[in-house]
Image 1 (cartoon, rainbow, N blue to C red):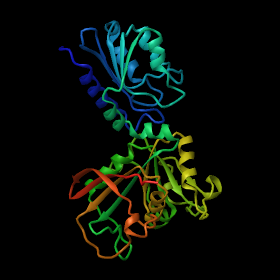
Image 2: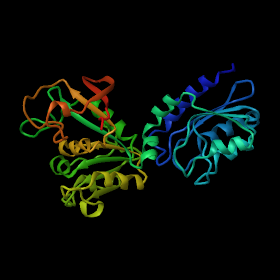
Image 3: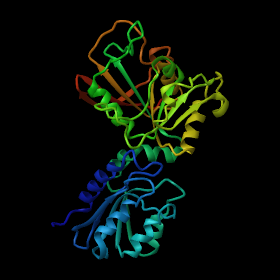
Image 4: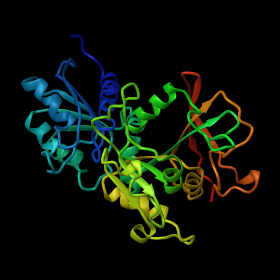
Length: 353
């Protein structure tokens, strides 16, 4: 096999890391490529599930003795602590790796320090190779660890004129089956799905990740979270059907904001404490507006159907905007056609203080 550059190896490691999305939480996604002294790939791996072997360990097992004197190319700084698995920094040292190339330092104070341990053992360490790409692939975990609450994605579906339902309240189905399938795939990448009690009372959603062709549930289900200030979720609501874990978050349990409703910042902090690193906010418009007004939304994914209703509920209410100068500006990062619909991905721009 021909030798590859460190840059090429990191690009491969970033691609490998994405294979773990949705399965590693509360751990990060990580990819690793091992090169022998001549630059030939002798091992590669990714972190596949929480509690399983880390990417470096998988790659070292493939490489065997050919790792000695070689280079480990890793998307995240090797861990330096013993949890459910041992420290990867020590494993790399024991394997005789001469150099470790890292894209992003580990922001978790419990696990960080691998670079220092490697250098102390005489291993050359390089940081920052393809850091932007590695950050993008691991953005939810990195963001969550740096600030202490989950990376929050607001997902909505609407017609071209911004309606989430018709004037009579009907909303099945605004978007196509292709778009709904895409949403279920998105649910499979997060740790929790949030909805307000109003949505539960109006639509009785299941909030599970499933295969729409046959209705089967995905093996891994996100936590279902109902934001329900006064505990109005019915005992027979489908979110209580046992298909996945459910938490009905009340103001009495989480804490109340000035409006007497669930304190959203406290809710996200509690979810982080429970191991949630990425969360998907679905329905309804009032809850979405409250999260946006509080500056707690990190990404927006909108499914826009080629339909016009002319009347009916809008996708967003009460986002704290009363004049055009207060509009929430967005940076559109992707526009993709999904069946007949458009999926628009955008990031809220930070408002200047």
